[in-house]
Image (tube, rainbow, N blue to C red; front, side, top):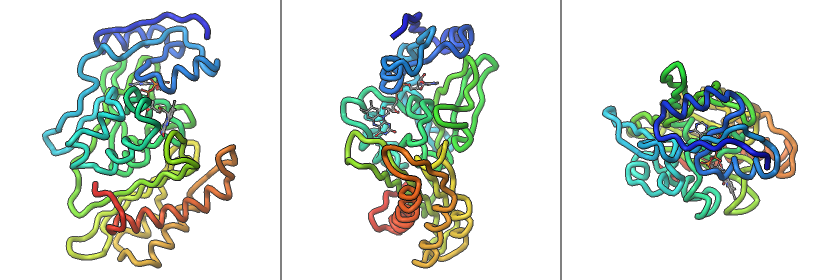
Length: 292
Ligand SMILES: Cc1cc2nc3c(=O)[nH]c(=O)nc-3n(C[C@H](O)[C@H](O)[C@H](O)COP(=O)(O)OP(=O)(O)OC[C@H]3O[C@@H](n4cnc5c(N)ncnc54)[C@H](O)[C@@H]3O)c2cc1C
């Protein structure tokens, strides 16, 4: 590991100032579970590392006036999985947060780190995008909000510019008659990266099986997490029949742009998108699905 300057600012303004001063040479660090291994293996060589942990307030989960949730970027996966507000309003998020990595890693790893690391396989991205979450960003020009769907620009790349930090994820209020499910397919139950991840969110017309709104979000099968828009459009306004679900799976597989790598071939990944999309949509009908 090369030498670097280490900073532990106590305010957001100070962090932004340091990050802006070093530009692309500066890396914020939260839990360090992605950044430290990358530094050790020489994949990144920061000039400056800026620890965010002393900045007050970034590790809180708070209710918004509109019934949504403000999840600070430094909230750990353990916090996310245990917080009652998350479990009640967005169980799909609490559920996957409690399954990622290992207990030790979850105690360190943060929401912001998972998203800003921008791995195409990041497990929080598909369910949060399905819930229409927004990224709250602070930088030298002030604060801005970006729909999480548009936050990722490529493997390891986001819309964050020099000096910018993710400070929180904003979740809109949960919608009635809405259920969501995220299925992670990996070789092992624990300590493994997704080969494919599929989030499905379905809102039904009250008292019917007719879909009023749908989100299908795919992870690990494109340079960034992506929405399968044609599959969503097919479901909207349609009854959730086996035929529609099967067609949605086929359309989602078409939307995927997977690669071959050590964890799976592109062919296999596309097949699994079809299978998991069907399972996730069926899950939202109550067949093992998590309520949002
Ligand atoms: C053994 C092991 C198992 C894992 N299993 C999983 C898994 O099952 N699923 C999964 O998705 N991931 C997994 N990961 C990856 C990792 O743990 C997660 O991505 C974690 O959430 C990263 O959070 P962190 O706080 O440790 O990030 P850090 O390492 O601190 O940061 C990651 C990146 O984001 C940047 N960053 C951090 N916070 C901010 C911020 N607020 N604003 C701007 N940039 C920021 C850093 O500069 C760095 O580039 C695993 C990692 C390990 C080591």
